[in-house]
Image: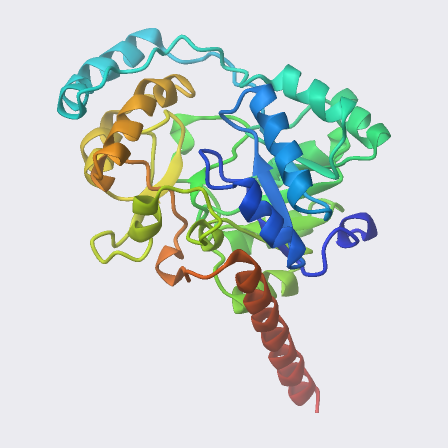
Length: 360
């Protein structure tokens, strides 16, 4: 990793920003204090809400941390298809006794207001998902002393990030839980994402930027593997979701290792954008018909998901999870960082020993 980023954390372990509440200030602080790099998730929050969490986090730790922003989304959604989906969800609204949300919310997630706050009162790192900012934005952060990371899912997206002046890329494989951070949401490419090991190798050969590898990573041996391929750090989300400091709903945490939920899939059912979660009733019934309409579908289903959680029904919740979810370990976040670091060191030592043996 570049020296600037290396100085921010003792271990090459990054806690993924998980929008929706999991990335609480308590979780981020615990990760940072243990030697990792934690991220707050500004997605779905107001600019003031983001700033309040930043102030709360600063009161919990003096260690460097990051904040993740969603890029504004173009309005390509077909209003007719959104209305058809709304009608299809009418039975869910009746079942959970809650109205469907409105789909005419703005699509920029308060982006400009959040930029203004982060440039006025800088944080150590800012990362971006669902696209790459223009060079003037990234240059502004550089002048403010903030390092920038752009989430990419292809070598071409990594090139755009490099051309635009990003300090690093977060390379997200298709194994990752939650939303795929593609720069362009094209329904024709659904399910065509690249696996992490192949993607890290391709990006390493395409750009000169430091790489943070993300997607299905749950053990130190996997961290060692992506580091061996040329990544500079590993980002884990699902692994931290079950920690006691995580703000995820208890039903979501329990579902990670519940034998009732055996696999994950990418779906548009909950948000209108491809996201990986545990397969449940809602996903099975509505996934095949959900339109490419983000964030409109997210706003329509938001109340349903909250009502399902309140009713204790994980079958109606968005149970975001990476492919390694069954390997989740419920332990304090700081302890998990230490365990992952020890596992990584052991795996790297074993690899070095094998290499020395082969050379002999």
